[in-house]
Image 1 (cartoon, rainbow over the protein chains, first blue to last red):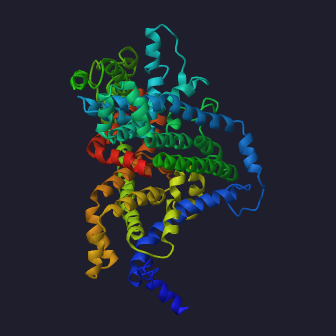
Image 2: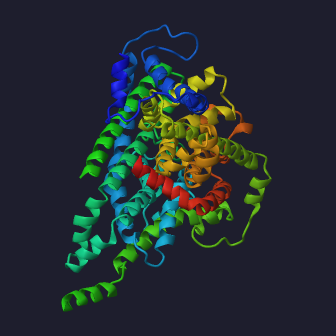
Image 3: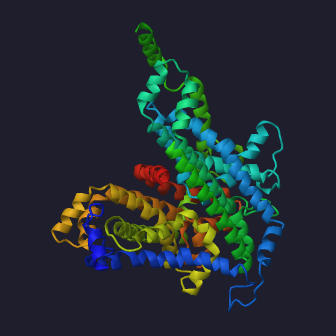
Length: 309
Length: 285
């Protein structure tokens, strides 16, 4: 046994004996690792395990969990009459991101990636709403939409149309929230694209231009393919953003009217947390967690293939 | 040759941003600015004036809303609470994440890859996903209605992303520095403190700014953890203020303006780190 070890360590392919731990590194490791690990296990890892376990019980949060109900909570969530709306709204957010927000961000990025006058100022301005707390953004737009004192009724007056109270209207509340989301987040996506565009070597674009390639073709065949990783990243952010959307909803509509504008997290808050139905809420958490993991795994895949190409 | 010359000249004459693009940009600028602009001015107007004079300057600059809010008990208290929570979150996030990333980057030990993978699992899901069990956990530990509860939960959820940023940065530092220090019989703790950290100011700034902004703006977690007015952070404070004043919009707009100003100021100061953290970190992550 001893001889095998020595031949192994003597062989040129393994230049030195592999030691798993240097004795001198024990104390540093005991200083460096436990604080993070304890916090992470207590507040990130264990809570998810807890959620999974109490999603199988009928539990109000006090006393031991004894009332095992199997998948009943999941059944309750999926057939809850507002859960479908919440999922649909989250999907609408994703769709609006893909079809309106990201193209708008890309258009702005293509215009502003250069060094022309004012570009820096305009970029900063477009990014400003992203820096705002969601609550503040929500309240600002609640004012804009206010049917008595806001800007929407004023626009209505000028075009002689009686505007509805957008946020109190079952149909209009969704487009109204979507507009706030575009306003708040398009600048963030624009910044991701600008960072990507600025990393394209200038020579590539110069060469194409000298060869007489049209501006649109440069965008289509050079710029967009070269910033594909940035696009994947921003799509990922808009999907995870949609899955965790909450802060903007509360000041704007609080999920109303008639629970028409709930997102998954505001649904969880309203029906799981406020009512202390922990089994029910645990089931929502687990479903949301599964969705997040699926998105993250697909994203890694896409990003890897994007970087390999 | 001549045609290439021509192409170069023609390209030079063509402006980088065309007229149509300027028009589009101007429209987006309006879209972004108008809500800010009306908010900032609305605080000085009377409630009746909002409807008849939405875009113009106020007929009389009435600062009483602002004075009332600043003089009230809750405004500065909520800002102070937010500051305490955010600064603690920043300090702890930077310290813990950098220590852990240092161990992963420089110390070889059994299971390091596994542990790192485990700590990065947090990248998979946002804190909103775990908010309900997190609430139960904080309750069981007696941390409800305390700033500490908000802080430790925020730090825990910042860890994955911050460790990743620090780890990537530490790996790019010249390895010779650590090796040389070890030759001189310098322990890892000293290397971390005297060699690595002083070289890591850019990434400390990025992680710190990121942690600060997300803590400053956080709403869901404080909403669930805190329930005494005196402990409210400003997003809870503003929601409470709005609840109390219903549709007395000038007051609410004044409050909004007062909270937006420090945010914009901070943003303009820390812009570089914010953008590098959000875009660079995002692309690498």
